[in-house]
Length: 119
Image 1 (cartoon, one colour):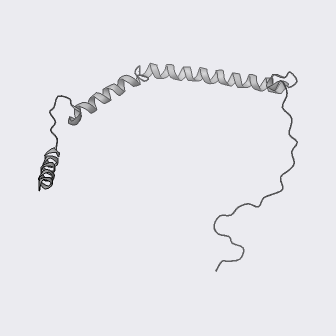
Image 2 (cartoon, helix red, strand yellow; image 1 turned 30 degrees about the horizontal axis):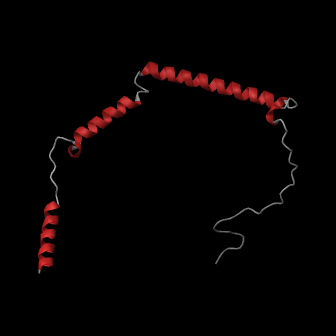
Image 3 (cartoon, helix red, strand yellow; image 1 turned 180 degrees about the horizontal axis):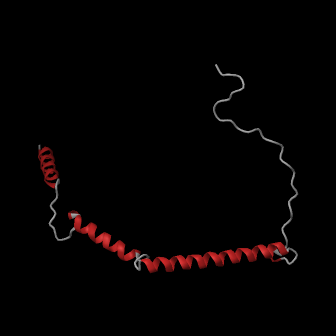
């Protein structure tokens, strides 16, 4: 039996009474309002962060290119991989004559059916 005071399985927290929040009506002018200077400073901070991230990305790209000039040449590497795969796979070679494996069984079955229909 279960020990009193212990719970097993999914234990959900008890719900508390939600507080009634007062929702602010959006401004007619949207975020272009001049009344809120904090949003202007926040937008400036976001723009500065974006510019910093772009500079950092450019530096990383330049560093990667300095180490290896073929870092971003995905297409040529992929084409080389596909050529190797085609060379190793004899089924994909167009010059090789391929003969059907099971057509002779189908032709035999057709002959048998024709004989049965004639009977």
